[in-house]
Length: 384
Image 1 (cartoon, rainbow, N blue to C red):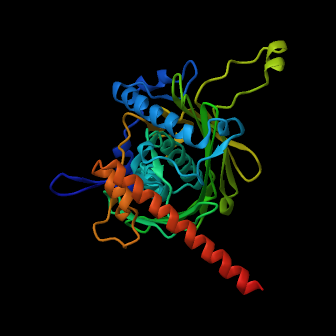
Image 2 (image 1 turned 45 degrees about the horizontal axis):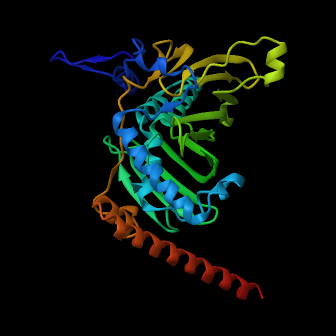
Image 3 (image 1 turned 135 degrees about the vertical axis):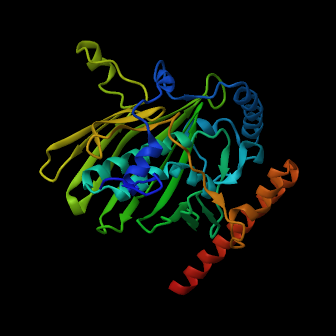
């Protein structure tokens, strides 16, 4: 569809052209690509981060004295143990989840794409680009059962999230496009454990986008992340593993590998292989007969590129960490009483009253444990 030229000389673009104009990324900035060297990962090395890290490590060591440092040897689950409030940022995980979806313009462009292959390419870019938004220094608060978050992105897209289970912790979300072109929904179970000087975590569960144009759905799962240097040494965050994207209605799949290590040490010693590319993203998009349709390259830290491009080759670099506009969800002023922003521990932490925040956090955890016991006893009586 060609742009419509009005009598006053202004040009009206269709949805696809307008979105492409917003991205303007094929002159992609390359400054951040240099980060994919050495050990790789996002490094917490700014003066502000170093200062905060010293204070955080002091709090961690103090906390470990209370629970026993030896517990780290066998691994320690971070989703079912109480941690000091000084380690947290003043947000619940429900609110922080929205950071994953900061490049909604890629979903908008996907919704307007006329080719299912182009659409899948843009969904893949949307999902992987959001990984870089989860590098916040502090730990978010574990949501309380029944806790909610309600917000909207600058373009009017609505987001609703609820904590629907306690053990294991499961969050459910609904994101509604402002023009009803797509519906993004899913359930995520978060697990994280600490062992020695590192933390490893992953959100499992399907992420699904349903497009109103043809009711087709694209689904995927998230990779795992590792934070090293928790107690001492250089601290950095890395993603790794595989992601599979599927569009069953059109027989399309895309398998993406992130920071894969390649062969083992002895095999690599005797058989020379290409050096492992830190933080690299490599994906292959295939059709229903398994034929290769396109290849994705780049880094979750900096950029993503499709060899054949999208929208008839108009765009090859579909995401660039410097140039792509970031959209943040803004909490609704009038929200449910269960909204995470009304938690007393969060309110106290935002005001800087740490002792009051710690007391409030402990009280909420005690109430949740008591409620869990009551539900368990009720189930036992009902089944007796």
